[in-house]
Length: 418
Image (cartoon, rainbow, N blue to C red; front, top):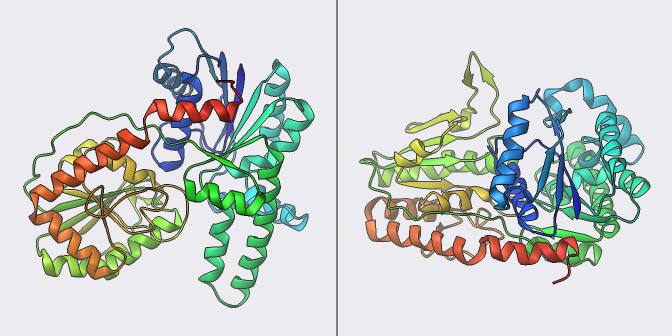
């Protein structure tokens, strides 16, 4: 079986949730013995060195556990802006496409260079499955249909994309609200059609799968992110220090951090005066080699360090991970990464969305500022609680995010008879 995997972002190195999810799915597909060839096609907004292309090939082949029994080809990505408004010369094209009814979430990924590259790969040799990673890449479904009408088409949605515009509209007024409502409607139409035009839909959670069923009458396959882990005991770092890891420009993360720093952190400091908090992640702009930190995060006891190549030293100096999230859908991979690292995690209900987590068992979960602050204080003072939550995170990964569980679902997604 030959599979072409089309994704929105060159997923190496995996420094945020989207690429982590993509790498996991690539590993699952590659691990199936029926798959003989896997070709990865993507875009990037930077020049990707050949060494990174080779590193991605090696990582997927190695993680599959199949040795030489699998051909992995990573096509060097074509340039295309991922953060559109950092490349403003591309904005008029997206606006023009919007005039022809193409919603922003599809138009922003429209690339003549990618279309040409994909057509070349589709016509290179027979293709059994085209795996479309992220809704935006469904912009290329007509190209797949023209070149390979009999190939199986799979759409993997990392989130309910149209919901973002609904949430945005609810937070705005006046002209911005009207524009957001119109964009939400266009996004819903595009999402519904894409869901119905493919042979299989992959959802990241049962909640997302139910949404796809309600929206388009399709049954989504919930393929979990695979999280291998080795249990470790985390000694007390010697101070009440906490960390955050995640994309620092994704709106649900930014909104969560704004709320946490302004509303929750002062309450934490009243309870635990020596508490400190370190924010790490990708996405912040830089000036003179230093991240430009939002004013809302510049409060006593909070430091923002931006991107870190190695997260282990951050985890080692932290007592627990704090993951405030507001809005969005899908699964917060930062929580799963925290579980894998052996970190007790405190989050909001939106942060736990899509995961069957129980407060005090797998993570500490609260919705209001006082409730979150109280749980952070308990993590500071109760070693038994920290150990219980850490073990609960490991148990959750073992039960829900093993390779065997994911392989069984992926076989159905790819149409492999069992």
